[in-house]
Image (cartoon, rainbow, N blue to C red; front, side, top):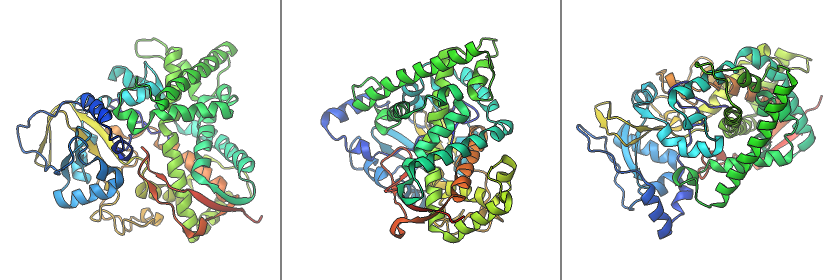
Length: 493
C-alpha cells in the first residue's frame, strides 16, 4: 500500500506512535540523551488550552500506558476529556484531535501551519536519502509527488494486475505448497516487496530481486522504528548501521538499473520510466540520486501497510467462513473459468472491495498521523500553541460508538448500504487520510490487495489455527498481528 499524501509535503506513511520500546530505555544515560534532544516546551497560549491529562512519571509521561494500549488510552481520554486533549510523552507535548469535527483542523490545515517535515524528516531521510521527500523544500516535494501520482493511474493498473497475479501464484506455489500452517504476515511482507518492485521499479530491478537484495530491504526497514523517530540518526546503533549500509547498497542497485535503462533506449510502462521522462517546472530532469530515492520511497512507504492490511483481511476471512464462501462465489460469478484477473472484473467484485474497506476501518495500519504546529491554531473553542505535536488517530475515529454501530465487529456489508454507519461525516473514515492530505497511493493499494486475495481465494481454503484470532502487536510502528499463523488447504478443483 503506497501511502503518500497528495499535498503539503506529506508523502510517506504516517507512522504510529508506539512507545513500549522507548519506555524500556530506562537507563539514566538514555533518558538524559533524549532530554537533550527533546524540543523546547511549547509557547504559552493566548487563549483556552485543551484539557491536559495529568501524569506522574517525569519525562516519560504517559509513554508506558500509551505504548501498552494506545487505542484504549485514546478512547478513554476521549470519553473523559472530549475530542481535544493534550498529554506528555518522552519530553514532547501531544494534542490529539478525536472525531470528525476535531479532525477537520488537521486535514484542512496547510503545511506551513501544521507541518509534517518537522515530525518525519529525521525518520525518512536516512531511509529514502537526500534530495527527496522531507529533505527538499516543500514546493519541490510537491512536484515530485505530482510525478508519482501520474504513474498511479488506471491505465497502469490494468498492466499491473497480471504482474501481481503472477507474482502471487509463483510465490505461494514455491513457498506454501498445497496445505499446511504458515506465517501469513511473513508471506505477504515478502510478496508485497516482489509485487511492488515488479509493478513500480521495472524489469531491471525486479530481475535481480533475489534473497540477498530482499534482505537489504529488511535492513533498510530498520530505519522505521520508535528509536529512529526519537534518536539522532548518527548514533552507532546496530539497526542504524544496517539501515545505512542497506541504503548505500540499494542505491547502487538502482543506479545500475537506471544506467541500463538509459543505455537501452527502450521505454517501459513503469515508475522508473516515469521518473526518467519527467522534469521539474524549471525544465531540469530528475537526477539519478533523486530517482533512486523516490524508487526506495515508493516501496518502503507502502510495504508495511499493505502487508499488514492484507494479513488482517486474511484472518478476518479465515474467521468468517460464510464471507469466505461468498467471496469465492463472487469470483466464480465474475471471472468464471478464466484464469486471468483483470481491472474491470475486480471492480465488479463488490464484496471483495468491502472486505478491504472494513479491514481498513477495524485494523487501519496507521494508528496515528502527526504534524508539528508551526503557528497557534484553534479548534472547537481550544487554542493549540506553536510547538505541540498535533495528532489524529484513524484507529480511534474508526471505533467511536457514536459513529459506528457495533464498531468492534468486522462487518463488510456495513458499507453495502451504510447499515451500521451512524455518521457520514467527512473525517470518520480516514485510513488514507482526507482532504489535501489524502493518500495518492490509495487506488494502487486496493488494486494490490484485491488482486492478491482474489488469487489466493481461487487457490486455497483458509481457517484460523485452533480457532485463535491474532492479537495486535502494539510494540511495532505499524500495528501488526501477533503470532500470525493461518491454516490453508488447496481447493478441490
